[in-house]
Amino acid sequence: MATVRETRQDDVQATRDEIPPEESTENTIDDSIDETLEETIEEAGQLTGEENIQDSERDWERDREELDLVLNVLPPGVADILRVRDDLDQLLEIILDLGRFPEARFVSGDAELNESPITADDLQNVIERIGDFGEDNRAGIERTLHRISAIRNRRGNVVGITCRVGRAVFGTINIIEDLAFSGKNILLLGRPGVGKTTMLREMARVLSQQARKRVIIVDTSNEIAGDGDVPHPAIGRSRRMQVKSPAAQHGVMIEAVENHMPETIIIDEMSSEEEAAAARTIAERGVQLIATAHGNTLDNLIMNPTLSDLVGGIQTVTLGDQEARFRGTQKSVLERKAPPTFDVVVEIQGWDKLAVHDNVAQVVDQWLRGFPISPEVRTMGANGEVVRTQEQARVSEAQPGSWQQQGQKGGRQRDRQTDRQSQGQPAQSQMAQSAAAAPAAPAGLRDPESKVKEAEVRIFLFGVGRDKLEAAAAESGRVVHIVNELRQADVVLTTKTHYRRGSQLVRIAESSGTPVCVLRKNTMPQLQEFLDTIIKDWHRDNDGSGPGMMPGMGNGENGPAFTGPNSSPAMDKAMDEAEDAANRVLSGEQTVHLAPQRSYIRRLQHLLGQRYNVASVSQGKEPDRSVLFYRV
Image (cartoon, rainbow, N blue to C red):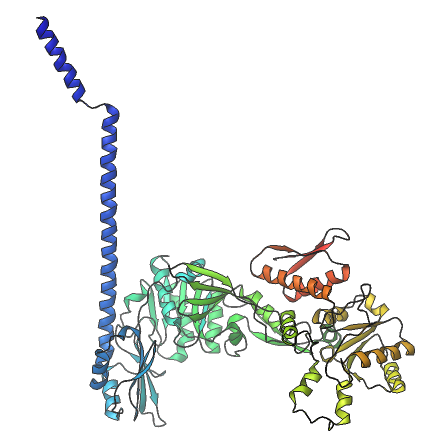
């Protein structure tokens, strides 16, 4: 009995040993789940990769089928030559001109296709195979994105045809996807063929499918959604309204808002004042507006009299005599007359590079006042990431709000470049530059009068009597030229009393780099001393070869320092630091502290901040008081 009992206990213990513990069972289940998940993820990745490959193959097949459709309408000899090429995916246009050889334009360059010139029968055969030409001389092939344009002679006969190959390129708006989803009104600028319509078409697809917005496309030439009544699938869920005539586009734009309750309206190639007015009406009704227009930069659009209303328009304002004198400008200046229709202007510079002007109202105001503008540049990286940088400040070509001396409109940076190029020699005045640009006369044969003209200094008087200065000049035998406009002056002459008042005219002169000479009193001896000094020292040599320093006229630490080419090294260093700080704030930094300076230099730094449209404030106590630049 004992033997049997022991045997049964041994069997039970063996059975218990065979049963795994609870922890071991859980680990086994977890391992099985992990293996299953890994296999599922691998299978899903393989499926996704296969789906992407299949989608790419379908896109390639569709592009090939649509390309065959445009090749089928070409003359047989031209189509056969194109079909044997291996770079058809780079084909942009086919040119058929009567009496000339056919030509194809690729991304890499142009190529002649046939040695036989195009005949009238060839053109007629092409016309018979495509749709009817509209009033804009454009036609298409049904359910494709190709555009066929005609050139006519005086009798209305077609003598040339341009076949532009249209393709739906997906992912082109990744670089500005944040702007598209922001709800802001966006205007795309670019030269012909840079990809404006392609980006516009992709915006319609993304906003209608991903953002689930009600998108209406006003398609004047059927270039966005293709020819025919059924739109191309590249526009997604967007609806397309065709336009009977280009002249009726503005009416269709208003009709789209009134009849179809859109959230976004997309328009291609705005080109008339009526369309600009219709766009303003749409924007004021709370509908997002996305459009394109021809032009390289925002400057071109502002100065375009037809389309300038898209960015607020410009108008001429006449200033009073005193205001114009204080500003140092002409009496007629340019100002923005209304809020801009578009919040963002995008300059398309290439397939993967563009410049973004956000807050168009502020940018246009800066440009009209002569301040530099600095758009954000976006490029597409090698791995598909968006790289954002700040473009170097562009110098405005508009009439500046505060006077700037000709030759210095590029700012202090250009002054420094000129100084480096001249290897430290002082910059020549405008009159000396004109003389240098003229053909030089042989030595010893120079006209004595020209030497006198070179020695003339253009003086702007502020608080100094004109009669007194002319009398002092006649008594001392000096020749001076008194000007009535600040921007024409080489020197501003004033008295200590007027200078201490801090007049706006003096501040404008100092900020623009014009030397300000201060007299203790408005007396004849003081004026004669001024004339003797300025005629002797304004030009580096007595032959008028270039301006030099003017000692005793306020260059000391206690007097008003010159802010132009005659400034001291300490002044140049302080103003260079201020300019660099202003550019850093424009590039995105919130605040930039400057080194402590004396009160006069701080005032000049504040003026420089105003020129760059940067806010500034003085902080601290003397002698550590300094200027702070910050973003508004």
